[in-house]
Image (cartoon, rainbow, N blue to C red; front, top):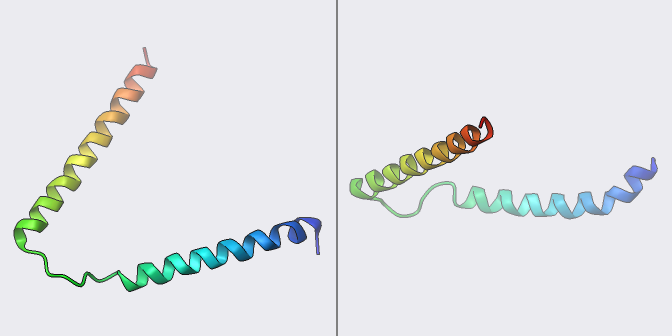
Length: 68
């Protein structure tokens, strides 16, 4: 075993355990347990599109300010 493996093995165990817990939680809630109406789906989709546009505008503003 290398020194690197000896030093990093406790951290690997901690992070593997944390990743397993997150993976288990994600698997449990992968399928929604409530029914959404079409109106709610449309609103969530419009919010998603709005946020993507805002992030795009932020990137555009950032890169255009770098070019000046």
